Length: 311
Image (tube, rainbow, N blue to C red; front, top):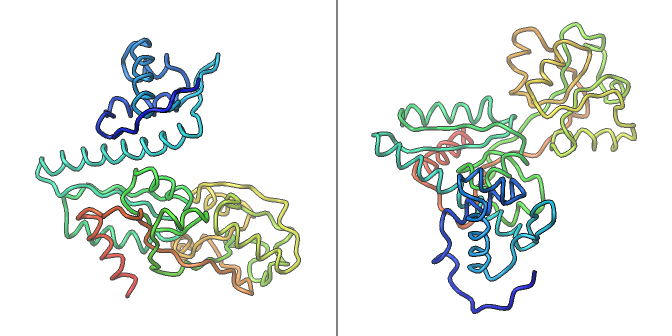
């Protein structure tokens, strides 16, 4: 369906929250029938509202197919931005209700696993001492996961690193600390005390993070740099918790951030394999959306992170 050019108008003056909810529902559900059910309206109402929305934008946002709808390239741009705006409105609503109830607002933070156990956890404890009634939500994931949430407006700020080149254009980055990696195995592992080079671990069973994970990327690069084949006896797992359990109950080895394995080593469950040369990963930092100011709680948390980085 091709639309005639329209005189440009201020989209924000006509677009309503109900319109934005429909756009996201159509993208997620794929049909006007399912989107209408999700929004508790009739299918005819949803179809008419979609026509109204496309009139507001002066463009076709969804291609109509016999089995449903798919966003056009321009529609994908609209869906991404509308989804982020709805997330921001929801966070505004949550914070408003928290403040009206006598609280101190809300704060949602994303953190990579290597930073969360120590650096971020201590910063969270500090801001909670200062703001006991602050509603704080902490999301721990890989960098690509938390930056996806940051881009969508579901979190206020992130502690991580860029995982794609495009992140440099949409986010600001402020270095905070280095992330040290270590190769670990269960206590009593046959290679404990014997493995000192990556070559000793080529035929070993590995518990690996996904290829998109920076830790996995530097491990693959280390094997390549030494002219070794990458491990073929491996299990890929996106959950750090499951990797920790796998190392504990099997002969698998893993490359993990030191803060993540410290408790297991102190408890005598893990042993460190002193692999040389050391496998290094670039530092992590504070990641925020460009040209978007932080709220009061986020600013205070940023300052706490900066102070801890100085320590």
